Length: 90
Image (cartoon, rainbow, N blue to C red; front, side):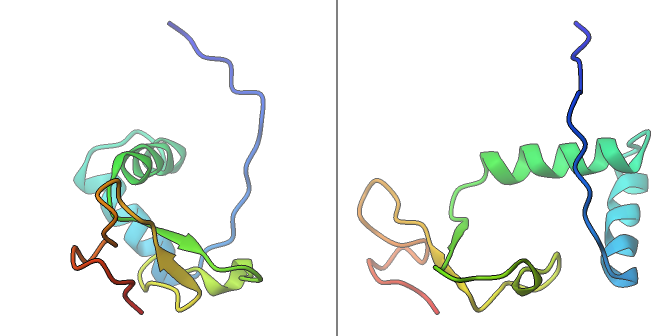
């Protein structure tokens, strides 16, 4: 099934972030950077234990390779944070 992609998403990456993306692309034999980004989005959305942005966080606060200080762990259904101890990590 062919999916129509009608929306364009533009992001800015540093040279280091672009290298990490390209390394992932070639390691996983993705046909393009766009395909690699879509695969990483799929994996990220399927992952457990991701963090949510704090109120007032800016786009520049988020990095590809380093976690942001402006994020809180999402609470899991068992009431524990992503550290598994029932407390929020910082």
